[in-house]
Length: 135
Image (cartoon, rainbow, N blue to C red):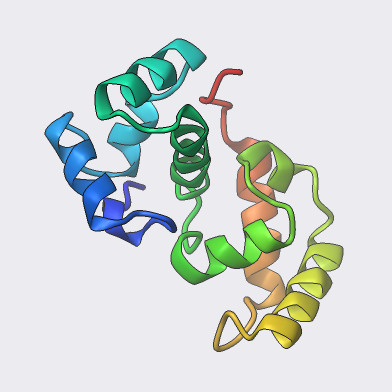
């Protein structure tokens, strides 16, 4: 599922404009353009951006393949140390939800923490998704 760029965490107007100038309009386009380290390095060079930022944005686009992850829930997951689909696939859903509850209680990032069924679905989906980002 493609997400518009400005819905991904960390996307400033400047970054969105630079990506659009490269023909990248959504999260799927970003993933397609940034699968390999060489592709990410080339995009970073063309955009005059830090390659590490391109990798972070690529990870966010990869997580956005899972429904309802983006924006607030994406930031909440990152706070819990989940910044890739692979990391999400390796989490225990009950423990992850407890961690999300704890983080949200401290930082008040979301109006409400995702229900256990939603977290279960995220982990299940992550386990089934093919890896598309190469390292």
